[in-house]
Length: 242
Ligand code: GLN
Image (cartoon, rainbow, N blue to C red; front, side):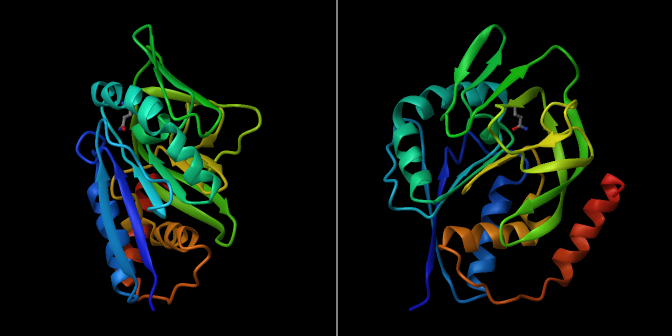
């Protein structure tokens, strides 16, 4: 019986800029091409989550005003279920605004938006310019070796990891978490956050496969013909100058 990847998109209409739907579609295709099942469900404001019903939770990017709508709901309605899901090693993948909401708080305009508190990080919207541009980072993930992730970033928030947390990668080119410390994203077991978006997964098929495999409990995935994906990856690296 082939396995089925059960994906839950959190706030798919509000937290959805820069190709988040494309990232989900890419996960679907890579499952289909291997004969794996794929189920996608979405949860919106006010809806509860069953932590056991999904293998991968996807929290996409969002503008500050959309994040403000989701933050309270995330902290009040979904927080405990997400902690339970993380405790049983379901993958929780946050991109940009979604990454910021994995932490304790996002501070902007003198207010503090709460987060899911899955990782010890805080984000502050500073007065300086938005951190925008092509970006490449070097990543070490268990089972994937040392790889390069290439994409695009556009965020006003500066994220600071707590001293016990591990970054997803080291900045090779671009700004990363805050433009200062050379760190990008966060990884804590199966909880992964990154500022890289644009069509992140199509440009980095290896990460899509890592997410699928990890979410399915370490499933060995059949190789695919990645000629196009590899070309997209090279182009993204070139754009970042790496
Ligand atoms: N609103 C957040 C920021 O500007 C996240 C932006 C995004 O998801 N692109 O920092």
